[in-house]
Length: 388
Image 1 (cartoon, rainbow, N blue to C red):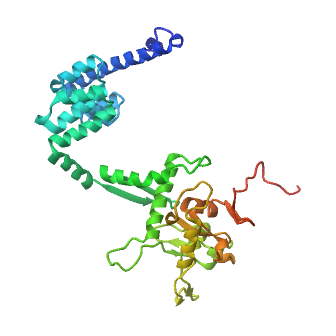
Image 2 (image 1 turned 135 degrees about the vertical axis):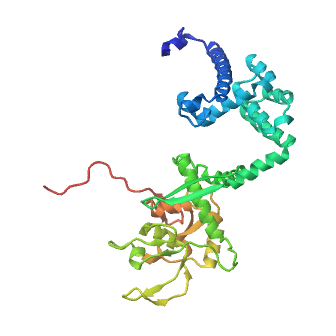
Image 3 (image 1 turned 90 degrees about the vertical axis):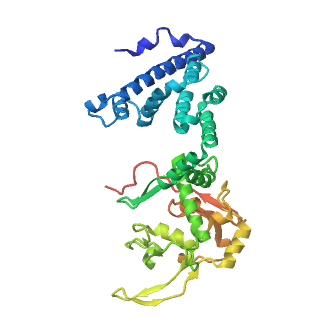
C-alpha cells in the first residue's frame, strides 16, 4: 500500500517557483499517461461480462463503485478506451505532452458522435492550440458542421427531456428540481445573471442566495408586467386572502392565505399590500359572503407614474433596479394611517422591499427629503431579567 510520503521523495518546501511549476507539469503528464492506460483497460473490462458476475448492472457501474469515480468520469474512460484505435495521432500528441487527457476525452466523444465523418487531423490542430474547455466548444461547432441533422436531433431530445418539478416542504418552502435544454438553460441564466449581481460592498449574500432572489425577482416582474393568458382578458396576479386583523398585524390573528402556498405571515401581507389592488369582502358569522366591494389600487395609476418619474428606480442606496423592477412602498403604511402622498411613497425592488418588511429594516424620510436606512436592532448578551 502506498503511503503519502511515497509521493514526496524530496522536500517540496525547498523548491524554487520554477522547479515547482515544472514538477506540476511533469506530474500531470504522468497522470494523463496513467489515465490513458486505465482507459484502455477499462474498455477491455467493459467488453467482458465480469461486471455481471460481480453483481453490477454495467461495467461503468462497477468502475464507478470500485474505483471511487463518478458515473460520467467512468463513462468517459470507457469511451476513450473503445475509440483509441481511431485516435492514434492524439494519443501520440498526449505522449509528447502537446495535449492533455481532457483533450483526448473531448476528441473521443466527438468521434463517437459523428461516426464515419470523423477527421482527426484538423481537430488535433485545434486541440494543440486551445484549452480543453475551448476545444470542447470548437468540437460542438465541428459536430454541427459535419452532421447538422444529428446535432439538431440531440437538441430536440434535450427539449423532450426538459422537466421541472415544484414541491412544497412541510414548512411551506418550495423545492425546485429540473433540467433544461441548452437553449432554455442559457435563456434562464441570461435573465438571472444580471439580477444576481451583488448590489454593492454591503451585499454579503452567497451566490446561491442571490440566484434564488433573482428568480423571485423575475417572477414578481412577470406578475407586474401581466402575462396575458389565452383568454386575453385578465392579467396574471397573486391572490392573497387576509383578515383585517392579520393586515393590521394584531396579536392572535391568523396567517393569510395565498394561492399555491401555505399560509403566509402578516409581514409578507403588509409588504404585498403596499402596492396592490385591495377588494373588501364582508363575511357573516357563518363565513357566508355578505358584500364584495370594488377593487381599489393602494397606489393609483397616476400616482405610480409620478413615483416612477421621480425615483426612476429602487431608492435603496447602491441599488440599480429600474422602476419597472420596483414596487411602491409606503414609508408609513396605509393600513396604519399613512397617506398616498409622494413624501410617504418610495420605490423599492423586491429584495429591499422584503428587507424593510420581513427583514425589519427601516426607511425614514428626513426633513431634507432624503431617505435614512436603519438596520434591524441588534441585541447582545443575555436577555434582560427582572429582579429575582
